[in-house]
Length: 265
Image (cartoon, rainbow, N blue to C red; front, side, top):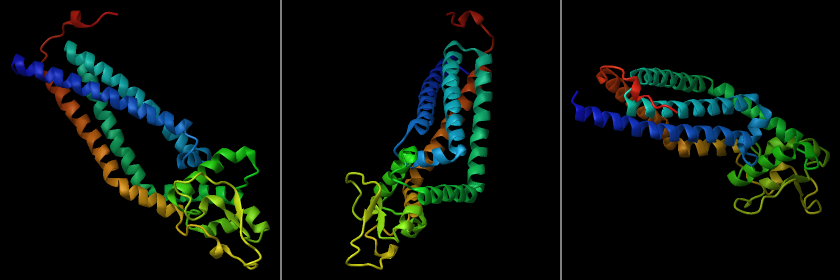
């Protein structure tokens, strides 16, 4: 490879690793966001399932490792250090294999994950109590989900008939966050009362609430954003493959080690 091509490869690899460093920062930030977020469906799952917490810590670890790899790749590319370039290629290969394995596991276990989420939400709805300060944060998060997705319950408003408080009230109250037309308005919490005088034998079918379950809303959101999700995954994989090709090409054409090029701090 000519010296001109070598320089182009070197600086392309440097630019790639700069982008890779930024990608690692984004992954790290996303993992931290999952742990600290208190106002979305993520918090509902995080509080009730250790799987999401584990996933968040994995994301933080992957993000930190990705940033470190980007940094080492930049040094290896600019200073033409073969050992760093070889290490960089190996790490990228392992990460790519790990991502493919994780994707296959999620796909094969999707029904198990769906059942776990369903159990978490049903337990939350059953124990929902606006006067219980201990679970106030997670209940507020679920109210926010129902309001923003214009949904009620997990499979439908009938899920709320299992709530302990509503059972005591003979279904003469309903969750305020399920009320029709709450999307975009101020978040309503707790239970609202029906006009018992006009309908003393009310059932959940008489509640003025959204009829769609939140499971359908979540699935609809995933379907709407599936192209973006797959595009991001494919983009990351292409970037990693490009980095592997550039690093191995540069490594093969660096004929000898010159350790005087290693930066001293």
